[in-house]
Length: 52
Image (tube, rainbow, N blue to C red):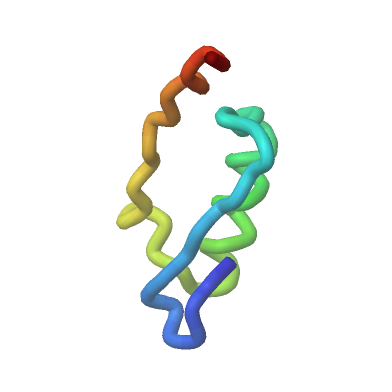
């Protein structure tokens, strides 16, 4: 998902982690489209809280 100005870019996943080969493919595509992938911030996802 990206903003019109190429200032915003998100990689979305249904899972808490993304396979490295998928992440690499997305990064390559984003760079080819002109995004500065060195500016990406990777958020560490935490496990789900146990159901109560």
